[in-house]
Each structure stands twice: as structure tokens, then as C-alpha cells.
Length: 303
Image 1: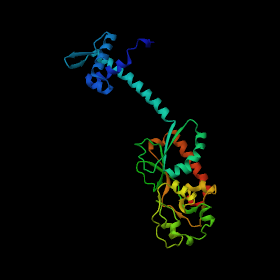
Image 2: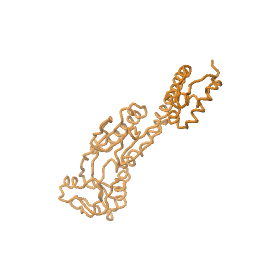
Image 3: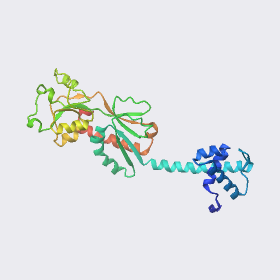
Image 4: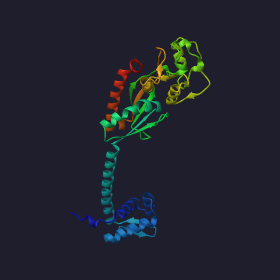
């Protein structure tokens, strides 16, 4: 077996391989992010160590020798083996990392409180949860799983419907000194909190001839809308999926029996390559199990 202590300097070998491939010290220097002089010095040091000329130099023109050409091929194969082994190790490390992106209200109010169960079942997985209202390019941004609320049209991704949702009004049990409206006809526009979800479809379902509320604060984040309702600022139209914690805790109560099905659904979206990762498959299985439990508890509104 060859004594590894007699190996040439690896930095010099990399400089030589690049110079041999480009037949030019300057281009080799650009590739390896060093100076032309550094490449020249490394190659001369390697020639002295080996006792053979690897290049012939004619002014600025450089020509690799036959011995140099054979050696360059051997070095290239060896460096490629090192690069391949490095990539395998990096992929193995990356396999333990899972990046999930979800809209803020779903991430904070439904997904995050349940993630402890997933980590308990998959202790070797590092899960990175990103919340954003923007529609990410999952492939470009290196995201393994996207949970989206929309129509399910996401080209280039593997898409699976998770569940639907519905809207209904809620209020703090202490709102208006506890004197909550018992009929939709008792609602007044000034009482209604606004978000990006319009009230008009619910008005129509309830048989009310009211115009869409205007003025005042408009909440784009449903978490802020829910907080405002909990603080007793008014009556909010909220999605059932994201308000279950507050409803279960008695911090908000549902008003009336009228609910409107959302025109959007929740979807799991994955790049095809990411879907093959073991940690993505494990997350998908866990998520579907959690949603099945939630559907059984929540009823038809999310089916």
C-alpha cells in the first residue's frame, strides 16, 4: 500500500489539474480564486517534488507535457472521487433537514402547536418552519413542502388537497358586556371587524341585505384579527381551521349557525425531487394523520 505521507500537496494538485484543463494559468487562477502567481508557484513546486516537467513554457504560451497529461488525468479522477464522496455526505446531512413553508395564520395557529408530535416521532429530523403570505417558488428557495391556501393550481409541483375551510362570525364572550347578538339581523356594520375575506358572502347566506363594511382597521393577518376579537374590539369573520384553539379555550364564541364554505382549500405542494426524500414522506404521512383527526373533531366545515 502506498504511503499516504508521500502524497503531493493537495493544493498544488488542484492548481495543476485546473491549469492542465485550461492550458492557461490565468484561467486556472480565476477558477480557484487565487492569483496567477500562486498557480505558477504551486505548479513549479509540484514539478520539483515529482522531479519531472509537467508543462513546457514558451514565453506566455503553455503546453502540457505527455507525462503531465497522464498525471493530470489520474489527478482529475482522484479529485472527482473526492468531490463525489463529499456530495454524498452533504446529501446525507441534508436528508435530515426538512423545510416547510405555510401561510402565517395556518403555521402559527394550526401547524406549530402540533409539530411536537412530529419531532417526537422523527427525532433525527431538523424541521425549519417558514411562515409567509407570499407564494414562494419552492424549488428556487429550497423549500421541501409548501402548505398553501388556494385553488390547487401550482404548476411543476406535486399537489395534494388536505382539507377545506368555512367562515363564521365569532366574538369574545365578554364583548358588549356579554350581551351578544342572537340573530344575524341584530348585527350592525360598526361592530364588524374587517380582513381580506369579505363579509358579503356571509351576509347573503344569512339573508342580510347589508353592504360590505368599510372604514376602520383592515387586518391582513388573521392572527391579528383574532386577537382584536379576543380583546373585545368587535365581531370577526374567521376561518374555522385557524380559530379552533380560542374556541376550545372559550376565549371566542361562535355566533349563529350560518357558515359559508371557503372558495379556497388547503393543499400540500412539493417539488417532485423533494417528495422522494424520506423526511418529506414522513411529514406527509404525519400531516395526513393529524388532519384526519382534526376533521373528525371539527366536522363538515373542513371536510
